[in-house]
Image (cartoon, rainbow, N blue to C red; front, side, top):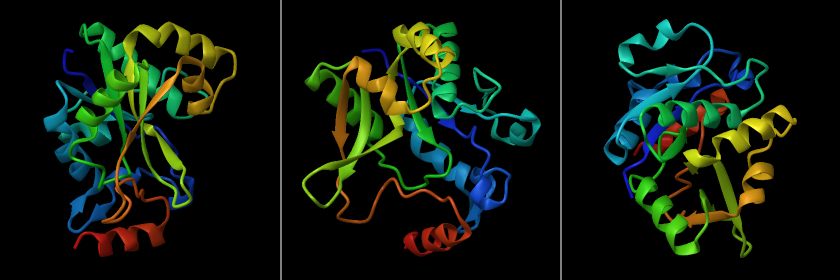
Length: 203
């Protein structure tokens, strides 16, 4: 399989942080987005950022900035679709998405998503962690998305679908399971308290 391209999802409005871009917050002296870019870049063929508003605030990152495919803030699926459209322009077959506010995601995220999709024979793969009760927690902003489904996703958004899993479950979803023995690798910074917790997790 040709290596997928990557898209960092930063299209949310960060209301619990008082607005602004969570990825631009400093964590251990570096912006969260810088940490995310450092983790995902070696795993993908090319990289873009999904964000709305003035793209100039991300100019120093040197990444293409993709606005949501819709302007009504329909959630992460709009960012996934924007990434699919960008990937299609480059001839890529798959997109991997990661969240801009999650600095500790696995360094082997992409190979594990690809392996899960192939082994489980599903077109879409999502990251997952144990829930402590024998089940799993899915992390729908960390996924492998086939570009071939972009028209289907566009139609779903037009029809009002907003929840990621509501769309992925229509097509069959592989799960790539990641351990939590050293902490939740998908811990994300949503509130000021989360930022404090993340500072403690750096060690």
